[in-house]
Length: 259
Image (cartoon, rainbow, N blue to C red; front, top):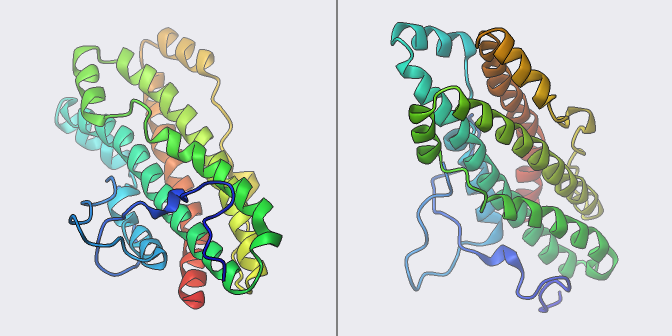
């Protein structure tokens, strides 16, 4: 096994501490948990994968449109502010969690490739995966603080939601493409290590909305079209999360098997 860091980045970006959380298992989002106490070593990469998979019950918030609409009507629109807050929050938190999981799974694969003498052969795949992970990492610095966006919504309701929906859709497109790319490379890498991890389904990648068309439809329907736009903002990430969980379970099982 090679003791050298991955050739495309030294030190590897996957050594950042991850939150300590209870055991792994699924559910349907917040940011990664508290940082490690000073002086404590970060958990092993395999444990980071397990913890990131476990945290999906905290990050991947699943909306029920009719329930959210009902509560919004019953509260005279007040619940709608919570809905908008959660729409922003869950995409930010989902991206951070998926970055941690894919990052840690890549570290495990690199270590295992070293043990099997496959690092040189698989370096191109690792390099491509690192490029996709860099996109996800950059997205964590985007201006997506849900509290700030909630204040925008209170001060400029309607306008804030339209701007937010455009940015959230762009985030979903960009995030989906980057994680699908990383997932594809990990499928190749883990397959070479003897573990079956299915390829991401390319047909599920999100295409950008027709933003101008949606805005015009909202204006000409005096805001009624926003109900449909809200529905899409809930359902499209719901489907995205569910699709992630399928490959995520295979990946977590593959990491556990190699460990």
